[in-house]
Amino acid sequence: MAKSFKILFVSSEVYPFSKESGIADVSNSLPIALKSLGHDVRVISPKYGSISERKNKIHNISRLREVPIKVGDRTEFVNIKSSSLNSPKYKVQVYFTTNYHYFEERLGIYHDPITWQEYLDNSERFIFFSKSVLETCIQLKWIPDIVHCNDWQTALLPAFIRSGYSNLFSKSKIVFTIHNFYRQGIFPLEEFFKTGLNNDYLKYFEHNGKFNFMKGALHFSNFITTVSPTYREEILEDNILNNGLNNELKIKEKTFKGILNGIDNFIWNPRKDQLIHSKLNNDFLDFKYKNKIQLQKIIGLPIEPDIPLYGMIPRIGYQKGIGLFIESADKIFNNDIQFILLGQGDPNLKSQIINVAKKYPNKFKPIFTFDENLSHQIEAGSDFFLMPSQYEPCGLNLMYSHNYGTVPIVRATGGLKDTGINFNEDTLNGNSIVFDNYDIDDFTKAIIKSIKLYYNKDVFSQIIQNGLSCDYTWKEGVKQYDSIYRTIFKE
Image 1 (cartoon, rainbow, N blue to C red):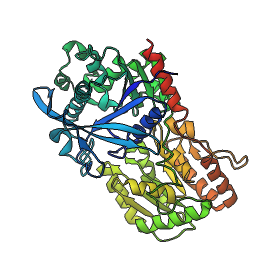
Image 2 (cartoon, rainbow, N blue to C red):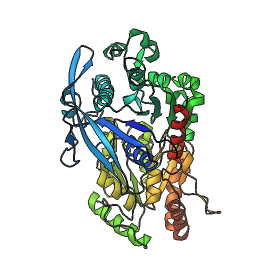
Image 3 (spheres, helix red, strand yellow):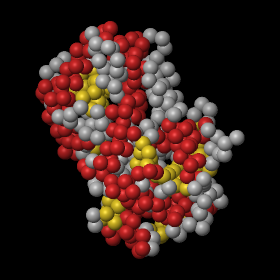
Image 4 (cartoon, helix red, strand yellow):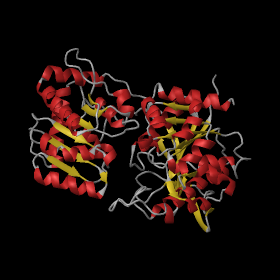
């Protein structure tokens, strides 16, 4: 029988407790998939002020209270609390780093939810979190075989493990997953000295005169992964995406792999989804019709089930193609369509989006918030889902869209290039509408193509069926992670 491992999965977001990006969904579904292979998997994440202890059944652990953590000259205390991730077959233990000053007094994860300004002490917050992770293991007397870190917020852990905690964690191996290489955890150089690491470690974190969290993780981890094969190749080469840090990746190229994320087919399953108006039975047209009308009612759009409805759930920033949408608004809304946007982000872009909504009030409705229930309803009720990203590491919403019979319109980048196959009307092959160039012409051509497809019902039905037939579970991806753990643990 294959050896099972003690795996600590460390993440700054974990659905359903906290979510700002796809990291949250992966930090739910991948640990459960690893548990299904027989591993002892535990997850740890901060407990932000928006997380309800009562709703999420979070409880105290008596022996993990008032543990001192030093950040620079400041000493803060951590209380560790506990809950679980639950699937129909498996339960995964979740620990929460709880501290009023750094986490509980704030409703946002990385940003103020009103101004969208990043918290000025984010470096301190995640220095504190990283140290609390290791103290939790020590207090529990549970030392993991594998520490699986995710993105810059956890990128100090590898260095901490290899420095002051090296005796206790001498047998632990470290996997670091890059979810977004553009966000590397970059701070003024003097912030490094708050880590308590020996000054000799500074060279592993200094990049372009700044303290770069992710640079250190690339050096100290045993293996590095990212969330799709194409994104791996892009960030090795494209300086726009990698801030010049690709040279550090190239040093580790032999232990760097792109593994396409999977999704949880229980949470994102139209036959079981508790967050949508009408579940899918055997009549797809009835499922889509009922959810579309319900979505139009919720959003406040005219009830018009026979015109194409487009959904978009981005982080509002230029990366997600918001600029393309704004600049092409007059061209696309010259057509008889409806459009829904749900998201948070850049205040300047939000004001431009509001101007578009004022100009086309019966065609376009933006909602500036995070609403998990509404995001599921948008997937279920929309005819098309838009992801015109400048870059996109994975693109989980493309996978969700296929599950709900919603046709993705995507740009060929990152994980979208790995999963989105452009539909060919002659061969009837393909599952998405894919455009190549990040410009207004290609974007508007993709919208026009979608409108024509929508009114050709037989052809439109085929592209939907092609998407519904895709398998995006963790079945293959989790095997690749399991193989990596086994390989590095033998070293």
